[in-house]
Image 1 (cartoon, rainbow, N blue to C red):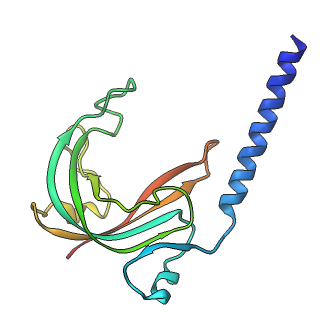
Image 2 (image 1 turned 180 degrees about the horizontal axis):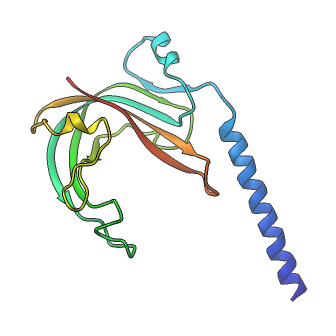
Amino acid sequence: MKNIIWAISFLVILSSCNQKTLKNTIDKKTEAKTVAKDSGNEAKESNMINEFTTRHVFIAELEKTEYATCMGMTSMCPKECGNSGEFVHFKTVKYIAHLGKGQARQEKMDHYRIQRSDYYKKPLTAPHLNVLKDLKAGDQVKITVEYVYDTTKSVVRTVEHIISIEKV
């Protein structure tokens, strides 16, 4: 019995040390490496560097808008979980910049989707969603999105932030 308690205590201590080490590694400001780029403007790219794992800037064409419900994995599904509603689907036409210095979402995206309403078809209130309501199939937009580490919780996760959406 003592061996089991000792082993569990050791694993808990080891786990907390690994989380602190990971958080310290993420918090350090390191120079970003350019994963892929289509323009040769180094000064413009270096001004975009901040604490993110990957930043995507691309031109996308609206393919369709559809209503979808979540997979029903929680007691809040599908009405209150936040993963059901109207989604706008885009196809990537051209990448303008693709910068990365982490391991999240390193590959370029062929398709991208954004939720614009909830389960009850009530529009969401993010500032970038105003551009989406007037778009029709075939319209093109410039999307800037970055993935950042959320270190505020006990488990470090990657969170998607839409920086801007502009009609082209």
